[in-house]
Length: 622
Image 1 (cartoon, rainbow, N blue to C red):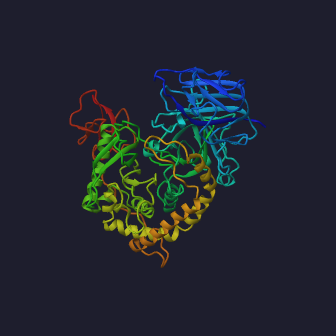
Image 2: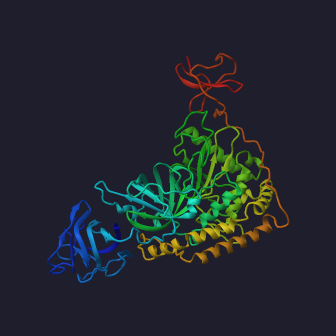
Image 3: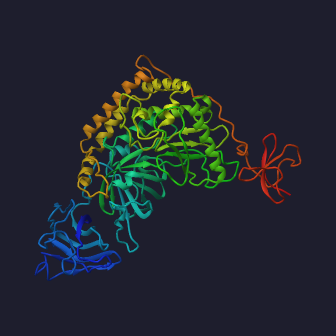
């Protein structure tokens, strides 16, 4: 069965002698013509920046150039094709001096911008006797994504090494389980097909990893909720590239596995896949549950943007402690006794994304209270922060020697209600894991101001719970981790090799880096195991030796939550147009919808009336 073969490769363009405003006429020339090269040629049609040519067949060497060869894709001499890239056409390797081999119904297209130093040329043709995209290992599910222009042609900006913005592209996808039996046993299934693809939106994500590497991480928004590869059903997933993970793509796997084992409220799951975008294999990726306020993820009340209702603003909030300055952010100096580098505490809004004045006031006061409680080393902190999740989160990050923890890519949430606290969870982005030493605490060696956790560790109550949780975890929940890691290594080993073949010679963004080489997964696996075992052995001296017995899970801290400020009407169970109580009774207090108390509301004003015993209603003052 013949299939449609799609090839993509990057060519350097000699553009000397052209003014920046010119769009030249381009022609296909080749030694398959008679007479060859110069006299017989096919002209490309142009629509904007996109040049397209359809021909019946292509067989032999070819070049693309303008009229006088001053713009020439390939070598400066017309005698050579000199294609840069690596793929396969009907069993023939494509590399320097690529020679097409009897391709039928050929469409050649490229996007050219005057003055550009490189461009990408795409060949679509019949003539392949296989259905595989070159570069796939065949050992993992394959996620196919197509992004097109309005005219139906491929929009290859999505795979440009220089893609830096975070704007969504509209596209389509299908997920082929590809005979992966172990994933099928975990409940995974194929979704859609090449004949019936499903809609999605895709955009680049991340900060440094987005701009420094040609292999980009992506954010996916599906047209409808799907249980992708057995994970929670949602529209929202991340495609993580781990282009900088020189520990065999094992940093996130380790953090997520340990977070799930230690019992944090929710920790993302991920599955390895190979990704094909616009017919071009992009290598090994990790389809990952995005951090979302959803029932099967961060299961808290979802608070709307710009909420001013005092009955709602106690939660829920999902925020990120961040390394980067953002517009939707609260900043304050990070307090604590620790004498190291004192950085800015940046609380970035995740959900909701936009705060009203009263929301900003509430979250600022909450973090100010925690920040000041950390500074004076009192137990007041545990009235605002859940101590058990802080302990469990810290154990995972310290085991991994993650020098960014508690300062960047660190999430906290607070649910709605008067009895709620802030929780450290979920774990995310372990890209700085194993960067610290195995014989010291990570915060003594990071480039960030990890002041909070260093100061928290001086709290006797925290350290007592830490010792009990550590011993319980290592004797009851950690067993089996090394087996999980070994299984994971074996499942992605072949895809790691093909990923290396794809990216080893790929051009990088200006000032960027090459994708790290993880082709030797056995060596990478040993590095992870050696680091963990050495760190665990050192932590036994600091947190407690667990080898002498068995330990039960400690009871959770029962410190009561701090009282909410009076402008937060958290106990309203519903509001009515007419107050269910006598508004003339003594002690009635009135609040605006933004939470400010008013002594004498004006006639016609809508406000919240609250009785001394805590009943409340939304009323219109007469």
